[in-house]
Length: 158
Ligand SMILES: [Zn+2]
Image 1 (tube, rainbow, N blue to C red):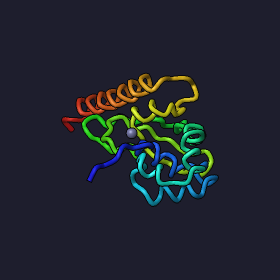
Image 2 (cartoon, rainbow, N blue to C red; image 1 turned 180 degrees about the vertical axis):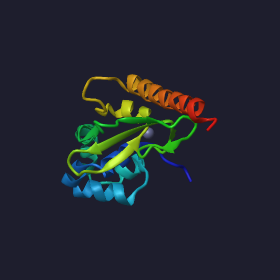
Image 3 (cartoon, helix red, strand yellow; image 1 turned 30 degrees about the horizontal axis):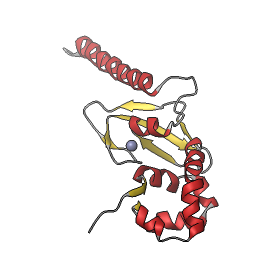
């Protein structure tokens, strides 16, 4: 069976399902909940009003969903070094984990840097970029590793 071309990316579907704005469109919410893949064929099978929604409203609604999310101000990102955890939105294993929360419904999820960039999620109020934040997280890990070395040297022979 042909897979069918996606009209809505899976990460966009997941972002919408976790966002408050979806509650404004119950039929769209139901469509996303009951279909893992939102394909062109699926949309062609909908009524003309719903097809027009995809043409005229979809990008706006995704934009509204995106601005609901913000980085955790105390702890926006971790460097997992050689470990990986899947991005909640796209499922890709990620080394740098960004913690974001939804200002409207209070949900917390973790996402990879690619999805932060893809959606343009505001992860840092002070204006640091995604790349600057990941570098800073890596430096923090190095610093902790160095502290452990010092600790070993000081107390290793006790
Ligand atoms: Zn992702």
